[in-house]
Image (cartoon, rainbow, N blue to C red; front, side, top):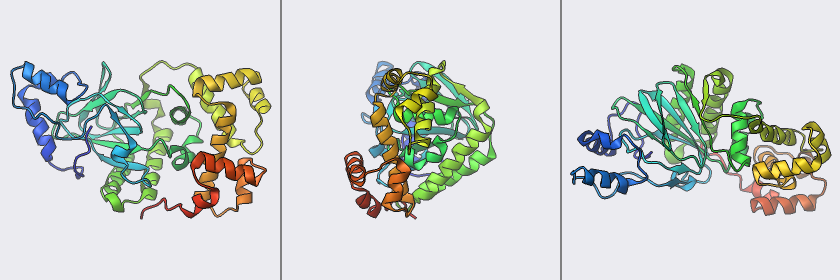
Length: 352
């Protein structure tokens, strides 16, 4: 995957793509298995007797791609750009959420040693920590990457999280579990509605510094909303799911909905576990204690209200289950690095 220069959806091959294509055409068989880095590809070429290959990759490659590699401004929460055609299939992991959308043509998705072919209208959602790569080998391919921050996902996409379906459960597990490394593949025919919102994201993201974070989030929300309403039946999971997969998201959703008054006793009754069983389960599945998880949900909600409403501090305390102003201020600053008042004053979150 490489970002390269921003392109239109119908652009001819860029400079980096032309170089990759010329290398690919010299010995396309060397590209059939993914590589771990550029040096491995160079070694394959040298072993095949081909010496004319750059010693450094023309575009960014790395075993782990971070938010700072692509989200160059702290306020950006969604970015969208073309996946480079003919870019070597190099295995890597992400620290963000990625949607790979096949706007036109086809792409090969590699999940370690597994290989899947995706066609026009198909798309996949890849979680942080999954070792993968995609490879596009035709001039006419238009493959779009939509990236979403994990660090602000709960606030930016809270509406999606409160839905009750496998996709919202999938996102809850990304946020709160130690082992959410799954990939969702949607094998569906081309949907003009999804195309339209991908185009809007692409066009807005191409404005770069002048792009609107509000519009990008809105377009991504609509895209995911259409997927939830119309395409869940076309979801193909790349792992076997057990009932365990759904329990923690249900617990988190119930805690978030009832955070003003929730107690451990009420939660254990709701999910038919003893209090000790429930606490052990939450730690095992998420790595967090019940107390930490509840505090995190409350403070995320408080930050959302501070950012998006003019509610008083007293009302926000009430909405999030706090009864003591000092405790609220202390917890908020420990968790988010600013007092609630400082957070509200520095909320320049939207670029228009």
